[in-house]
Image (cartoon, rainbow, N blue to C red; front, side, top):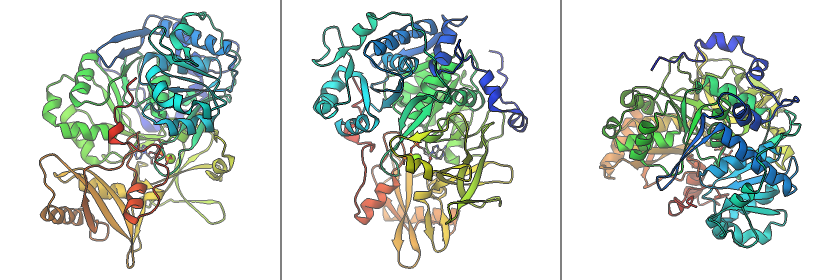
Length: 581
Ligand code: ATP
Ligand code: MG
């Protein structure tokens, strides 16, 4: 295999030369003018030399395999667009999906965009109430789901959703429940020809609900123009090249699984792996080896699980084709970066973004030295700064290297959200002086690398110090006994907040007072007495969102006996495998 020249060779040079018009030029545009995500993702490849190239390689739960070429994906999504048109779905109408990772989900997403309706994915393990709530808030007129998910989760709430006109169900022949349409039969009866109608870059395309880590999930609206950023960020941060085999492990029910699990890789014409099965350490290594994955986009939770499974397991597989590993969703501690370097032979490139930003904003790059624990530098085209909000609604930039501030992004990049669905005031409150304020705190070093401190909601103020949970958690996970840690502040009459740690132990370690003392001493030695936790609580598990984020607000609420708030996205062990069709 010949070495691949990185798309971003020199960070300073690329960032200085880049503007979004250049990135628009990398795309095709609709034949009659305008911009449509599905045209960029599928049709332009389907019509050209890549028609027979594999777009999606699906690996089913029971060992099934299906390769879908760009040409076939173009025809299937045309058929779905025709089905929507025949059902009277108009541009701007909301089409939802509630599906496991099956090929139909990808067809539905792309066909929806072709019909210029707004695509809204739901995570398939949601119970009836989170499904009802989102469909209602988003005003969904069509839902695509599976027969079993329909029977168990949707049928019980269907009569509470008067706006939901049609449910298309993926089912065995003649098994679609009463009151639904058979997805596959509808598709088979539709024409394979479809001409995308005029689409303006500012037309709404996607509605994504946030993870609900800090409170009730918000619905972020994105437009077709977002594809400019999906494509450009995948070029720089994921270094996609046409012959890559790419695997994004995020579920397409969340923004990562849509922006980088559906759209971005297709715009690059690469082969994307879709794995229906859930996480399994040996299964994942087998996949990386057998499919010859070259670029792998995953998350800290998964990397921690692979670390727990051990380096010996990793060494049983040939990961020689793997060129780049990237991570998003949660802070990535330096010990995980080092472990990956040692075990897989390459570091993990951390990158940072949010549902609201639509795409990667701050990132590490193959050609830029990694500083373990840092999220890297703004992607070309993105201006990021650290600011402090003032009382009068303005912001003050923070200039000093090392001083924490809120991450602010200069408004106006292509994949910036254009609204919170149904909440214009909340949207307006996110902006000041031309900046989008992210609610996350970071520091910046003298060379422009960003270092995550914590969410503004999770930051601890103890004895006049501002303490970021990430720093404390990173020190704890360095200890051999610790698999995972979460840190919160608990009210203390003297300190204001006292730092409290919740720790999950690695297999083979027992809870004991000695171990607690040892952990506290380790943390004091690494962090100093003022920043180190005052207490350690051993727990079996930490509360996570279904997208893998630690819900510190829930740890706090439970400790203080306060109301638990919106739990619609809480991962519940007993529901872990409910994503199955
Ligand atoms: P909600 O907004 O509903 O509380 P959420 O913020 O968790 O939920 P997402 O938009 O899915 O919803 O997650 C974005 C957040 O995830 C970021 O604001 C940040 O706090 C965290 N995050 C993402 N990537 C990273 C990273 N590389 N390092 C640190 N934190 C990250
Ligand atoms: Mg958020």
